[in-house]
Length: 396
Image (tube, rainbow, N blue to C red):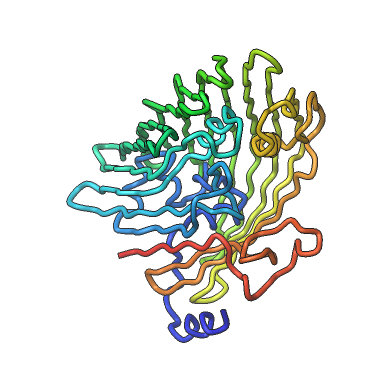
C-alpha cells in the first residue's frame, strides 16, 4: 500500500475524479445500483439515457460469484464490468455480469436448500443512447442458462429492458422484465415471474433534487409440488441536497421515505415481511490532494417500523437469514416493532492516476480484506487491507 501511495504522489496527476463505482455509492450511503440524486455512472443501470453521460469509459468491479445464494455483498462481491463507447451521435454500451439482487433474493425464496434455484448467470447487456431534443437510452439484457449434467437439469430464462429519458433538470425511466423463469426440475421447484416493473423520475431545483421510485414484482412459485403466488413492492420518495462547499469538496444531505413489502402466499405458514422508515443520510466527498479523494457518510432511521410473519418457517435457513436481514428483523415468527440498530457509517477512497481511478471502501479489519461486524475488529482501520470492494474506472 505504501508503494502505491508513493507512486501516485510521484505522478502528481489530475484532481478530476471519474464518476465511479459501487464502492463510491456505498461510501456515500447510497444504493450500490445507482443514486437517485447524485451524479454517478451506476445511474445508467436504472435510467438507460445516462449511458451517453459516460461515453468512452470502462468500468470494472472486482469480485467472484457472490454469497451462497448469489447476492452481491461487501463480504462476497460479484465481478462485473463493461464499456460505453461514443460513435457519431450515439453511445453504445456492452456490460457483463450485472445481476439483479432483487431477482436473486426472490428466486431463492422458493428454494428448499441454499443455491438450489438457478439464477441469472453470465448476464449480457447491450445499450444505445443518444439525443433528439431530449436525451434517450435503451438497454436490453438477457441471461439464459441451462444445467443438463446427468439428472441435474436446471434452467433459468431472463430477458429485460430498460428505457429512459432526461433533459436539463429532470429524468424519467421504466425498467421491465419481459421474462423471468427459474426451474429446478430435480427438486420440483420453480419461480415464474409474471411481471416486474421499476419506474421512477426526479426533478432538480438548484442543489436540491426531489425523486420517486417504485418497484413491483409478482410471480408464481412451486415448492414441494404445491403452486402458490408471491409479490414484492418497494417505494422511495425523497429529497437530496448535493452542495459544493469548494472546488474540491462537497457535502450531501438526504431524507427519504423508504418502504418494502414481500408476501409469500404459501398454502401453509404464509410468510411476509414489511417495513417503512425515514432515514437521514449525511455525507461528504473531498479531494485531499491531486491523487487521493476521500468520502464518507453516516445514516440513521429517524423513525421506522417492521412487521414480519412466519419468516422462521422458511425451509432454508440461509434464506431465513437473508429475508430477515432485508427487513431488519429477527428470523422468527410474528415479529413487530420499531427498526433497531440503523446507524451506519461508511468510508471510501479513490486513487487517481489521470484517466484511471481505483475505488474502494476503507477496510475494517476483516479476513482477506472484507468488511466485518466482529466486535473485536469492527471500527479498526487495517492498512494492509485498506480498500475493499476494489474497482477501476478508465476514461479513454
